[in-house]
Image 1 (cartoon, rainbow, N blue to C red):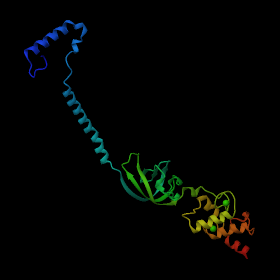
Image 2 (image 1 turned 60 degrees about the vertical axis):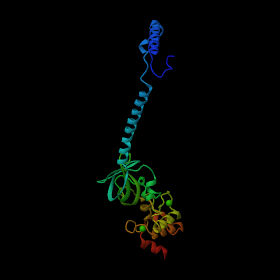
Image 3 (image 1 turned 90 degrees about the vertical axis):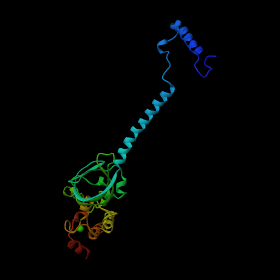
Image 4 (image 1 turned 120 degrees about the vertical axis):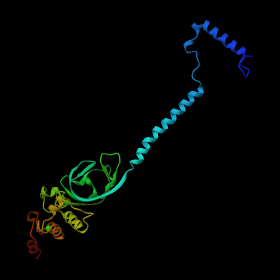
Length: 242
Ligand SMILES: [Ca+2]
Ligand SMILES: [Ca+2]
C-alpha cells in the first residue's frame, strides 16, 4: 500500500502523479502557486538557532564595554576658589567641575555640606570621587575635610544687631549661650558669618568672638549694660563692673 513501504515503489510514483493531476484539474479550488511544501522544518530550526547564537554574541559586546568602564574611586586635595555651584555640581578654579548627586557625601556634617558654600568662597578641601560613572562629571562621594579659607560674604555682611549672635532678631541670654557654645565647641555649635559679626560686641573688630562678648550680653540681661552701649571697649566694661 502506498506510503507504507520503506522504499518508494512504482505504485507510489503512480499515486503521486494521479493525485497531482487531480489537484490540477481542480486548480480553482487549490492555491497551486503555494502548493509546494515550506522549507523542511529541520532547516528552519537550524536557521533560527544560528540567529539566536549571533544575537547572543552581539549582546556580549556591550557587557565587555561596561567592564572596561568600571568606576574608579580617587582622592583629591587642594585649596581653591569655588567659581560656580549649582544644586548638583560644583566648579573649582583650576580643578574642574564635580557632581554631587545626593546628601550622603557630607555624612550629616553641615561644615561639609556644599550647599552652605557659594561662588567666590575659597575652600581647602579633600574628598573622594568616582570617575567613569554615568554623570557629566566625576562625582564627589565623600568629603574628607573642608575648611572655609575665605568667605566671599565677609566683605558684604554687616552687623544687623550688636549682640544678636544667633541672629533671631533679639539680644538675650540665648545669644550669650550661643557665643559660649561656639567658643567651647565650634565644630558642633558654629555661629553663622552674620552671627559672628553681631557677636563681637567687646573690642569690636580687634578681639574676635570670645567669652568677654558673652559676658557683655549677660550684663545687658542684668541691666548693667544696655544694647545702645554696644559695641563697647573692654576698659569701659571693666569700669562698670567695679
Ligand atoms: Ca539673639
Ligand atoms: Ca569681642
